[in-house]
Image (cartoon, rainbow, N blue to C red; front, side):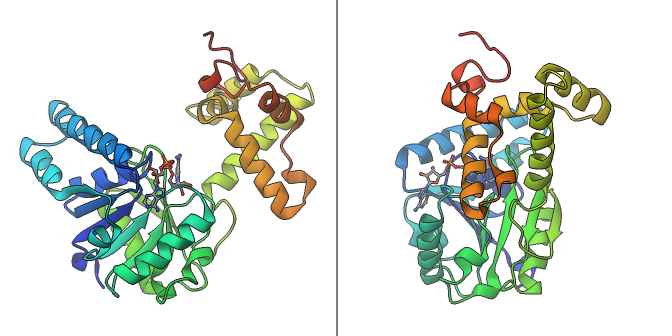
Length: 289
Ligand code: NAD
């Protein structure tokens, strides 16, 4: 299959990632079916698109015709068979849970046309953990967008040992046609590129804090003003949630047993005290009530 043969994209999951990937693909000219088991989530996604597209027209980023065409390209539904039955490329962006994803891939393999590529947007689950439930492992890969998917330019395309060259190349081309700057990983590795680099920075920042070398504010300031990052590691963790940092690290520690993967004492303390960042009003910074 060539890039021009991709007419319809099916996005599984209409949550944080799925609804934005769907709108993005619709704007770039693909017919899109966004499917979710949760009707409320679909309504929310539809409502977002309804506001977002005219907003882009107001900001002169889209013409009225382009916005109308994108809206016409979009369809939201709860029926996976209908959504994926005539899709050329499927991007799975459902809840991060291996068993759930394995069930979805098994079903997708039954309902999607044999030529369709099945990609997962998972942040941590490599596609070899789902490819084995399909009859088309060569057409399975990771395609990892970043949040918010309508804005962030990077997409990590990860080639598993089962993924064909053709599939990886097609995923790269699709990402480019969505106006992204994709990067290709030649092999699977936990956390891919970006989350590995981010976690190395976070771990070092936490080490420096735990050792009493500098305050969270000063470490953030150094990272912003010397390294040119838009946000320091502590501000970022407050935004994404310290509970998430804790759970991701604990999950990894359970898998590897490596003490280096354990959450730092500060993260554990903040987790226990429910100082999870902006969502609870306090994290490394105080956000008041
Ligand atoms: P989310 O919780 O916002 O959305 C997940 C959606 O999947 C929900 O709407 C849920 O109803 C739906 N879902 C559950 N089971 C389903 C099924 N069987 N069929 C169809 N839909 C189903 O999650 P999210 O943040 O959008 O993350 C989705 C995926 O994207 C995860 O694998 C995550 O690792 C990955 N990801 C997340 C981010 C992020 O910053 N949130 C960034 C990159 C990648």
